Length: 278
Image (cartoon, rainbow, N blue to C red):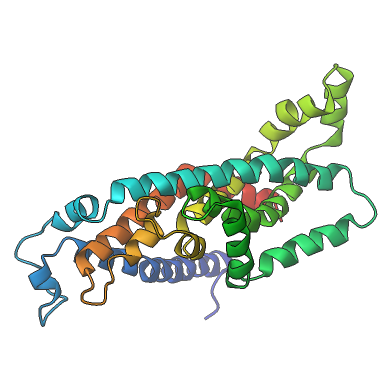
């Protein structure tokens, strides 16, 4: 018996929904496990039946994050690093991407290729030279050194993200604005940027994630606990004598929540960006 077109279409949609649901559950499983362990007392975490539900839930691990591991300072440092990375990446990457999109020159394609090749270099290969540079500039044990390192790696990616969005803006709109008396700079800020807002929000999200989740530069440049971001603070919960599993899982939840909230807040821009960009 052959299925009709509508039946095949419904079957395909149902199958895709089932597959996507399974994938989503698999991806959410680690977060669910972290949330589960973070609310269990230490006695239940180290019991012989770790999958069993505890008799009572506790918020002590979250309290210890701020009392024992100074997560309040670490959150502030992470926000400064992520926010500065967003600002620097957009201030430098936005005009650069617009220049590549609107004013191409002989060899601009090669320059773009070099940018993306530079982004493909693993950060571990840059740790030693970056450490030497930060040491000579006196930027060790400061969030400024981490901001510079993350922004340098993130900038080529931002340029590649924004370039196709600027190319989608009709040149006729810019020419009409210039005829109305706007300078090229004001055309960029007042006309082009609002029309390329989905790309801007996409770049904001990726830049925030780059600064918020980076570990290798904070781990290399910072030894002062008062300057450490969240990623480095999580490492302090693994000592030579003990691993604070409850606090580690609670810290993982704290580290994960802001990017998740930001993704949902910028969801409509990301969907529009997927349809507009590369």
